[in-house]
Length: 158
Image (cartoon, rainbow, N blue to C red):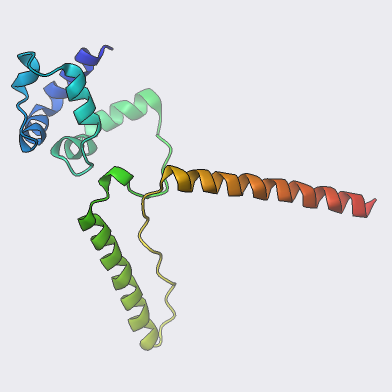
């Protein structure tokens, strides 16, 4: 499906939400139809709208589209629960920190009351490319160490 055809399907399904998001950015959806702005530009804007935008909220709450996508492509792999880096505003960072502190406070209150709660887990934070690469490197290094240990054990048993 061409870019234009795909965008027209999205506009047909989520037009009011797209129009609202564009309006908050000072853009008019009609400018794409009037050829004042390119369809490529709309494609780029939609792909980079934050998760809390009207467009993404409408897509996330579209039962029909979710069912059709799963039927066509299967169930997508689950992430680690961390939000996208693009969605991390100062407000989101402060909310996560507040949530973490509240979890610690609840834990402490339960302990003071004589309970044995499970330690609170911090709210997942976004992962950067550097952190993902570092984790992959450490994982590969650990795999090599495990192979070395297995080889050493084999040598010692012979």
